[in-house]
Length: 108
Image (cartoon, rainbow, N blue to C red; front, side, top):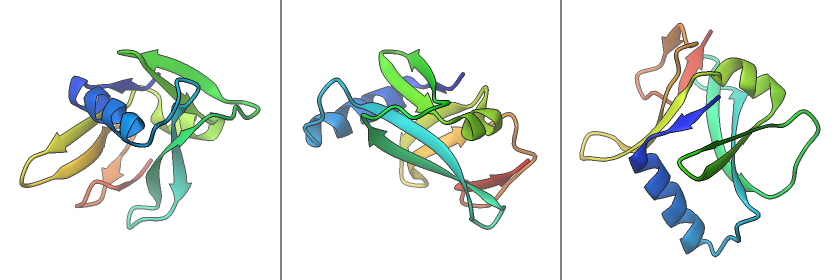
C-alpha cells in the first residue's frame, strides 16, 4: 500500500482541478530505471487500467501502481513540501537502502 500525507493530498487535488481532470482519473505512481541511485520515481495522472495494476485509496486519493512498482514501493508515503529548501513531492520509502542527495532516485 502507498499512503499520502495531508499536504500531498491537497496538492494532488489542486493539480487535478487545475488540469480539469474528471473523477475517472487517478494518480499513477511508478518506478523506472534511472537517476543517480539507479531507480527513480514517476507520478502521472491516468484514467486507463492496465493488466496487473494494484489499486489503493488513501484520504480520498485513488492511487495505482503497476506490479513491478508495487514491489519497490510497498509501505511508501508520498509527501509534499512547499518550503524554501525543498519544493515538491517526496517519497518516504522504507524499502530503499540508499537514496541520492536530491531524493528523486533510490536503490534497493
